[in-house]
Image: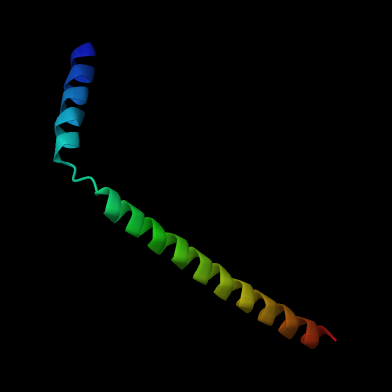
Length: 61
């Protein structure tokens, strides 16, 4: 059991060396894309929500 754990962590270490981590500039750029997308999507969903609420209210009355 202990030997399997050692092999596992050795393989994890080898796989971690293969990972290509983004540079600081790439990370900042990706973060801005995610933030802008989140704001735009939340605004769209808010508008759809208000529109559907008004539609349902007018159907109920």
